[in-house]
Each structure stands twice: as structure tokens, then as C-alpha cells.
Length: 153
Ligand code: ATP
Ligand code: MG
Image 1 (cartoon, protein in one colour):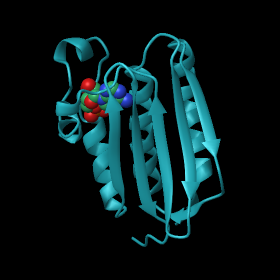
Image 2 (tube, helix red, strand yellow; image 1 turned 120 degrees about the horizontal axis):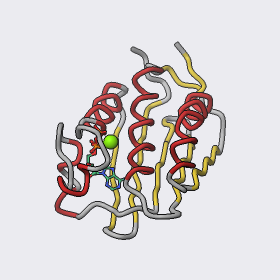
Image 3 (cartoon, protein in one colour; image 1 turned 120 degrees about the vertical axis):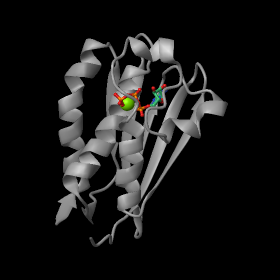
Image 4 (cartoon, helix red, strand yellow; image 1 turned 45 degrees about the horizontal axis):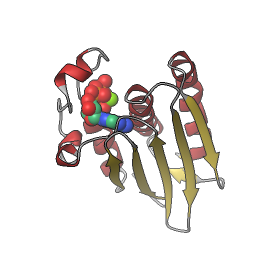
């Protein structure tokens, strides 16, 4: 079915806002235009939840997370940026692997299993989309997701 992606993201953000607040993270949402797309609502919600949850979880004291939605005639684009701890360059290919976590000692205290990004990547690929990561240690991370608007299951 056709879903308004703006609504999907707002629902995900509404659910994560209390977690951001508890961690003193400013959660910013920028939506540049309305986007209607044929997507699996449940799978994509989970995909974006995982990205935003990570951005909150691997952040720093008083940090921020910015989520943006944009589109052109072919694709919509969701960008999740954070002011967090970043991902070392040599780990950036592995983070999408199941059970991979950058720093076992560091992530032990944060819970989770290391499946989040593998699930996200699967959901994005299921929609014939692409996901990329840009990150610098101690500066922050940006994930970009691009999904075709005329996707038909
Ligand atoms: P789960 O998602 O299952 O709760 P997880 O968050 O450890 O556990 P993934 O979401 O797959 O697993 O992420 C894999 C690893 O990539 C994380 O353990 C973390 O080391 C790193 N990572 C992911 N997102 C970020 C981010 N925004 N900033 C810094 N590191 C990140
Ligand atoms: Mg995760």
C-alpha cells in the first residue's frame, strides 16, 4: 500500500523521543516535502528505528540527532546524522554484518545484539534501495538511505 513516509518517520520519532530526552539528546526532524511511496510500513519503520536508536545510543553527553526526509522524482532520501562517538574507518564495512559490534567492551553496557544494522540493510535492499555510512571517530556519523518511490512489491 501507499504510505506517507513523513507520517511513518513522525511515528518512529514519537516513539524514540522519550529515549532521546532521557539521554539528554536533542532530536531534530527536518521534512522538506511530502513523500508518498509504496513500501512495507512495518519493515521500514523498524529500519529507521534502528538507525535513530543507534544515533541516540552511540552519542555523547548533550549531543544531537538530526533526521531529514527529502525526495526527487525517483527516490526519497532519509538521512540520520549524529554528534556521537563515530565509527572507526576500518569498521565501517563490518557494521552491517550480523552480530558485529565495534567495541565489545564499549557496547556491552548499552544492550542489544548487533543485529540492528543487518536488519536495516535487509529492509532497505528489499525496497531496492541503498544505504551508506559516513563517519569520523569522535565527530559523528551520518547514515543515508535512498529508496525508489515507485517501488511495487
Ligand atoms: P542492536 O541494534 O541489535 O541493539 P547494536 O546497536 O550493537 O545492537 P547495530 O545496530 O547492528 O548493533 O550496530 C552495530 C555496531 O555499529 C554497534 O555496536 C556500534 O558499535 C556501531 N554503530 C552503529 N551505529 C552507530 C552510530 N550512529 N555511531 C557510532 N557507532 C555506531
Ligand atoms: Mg543498534
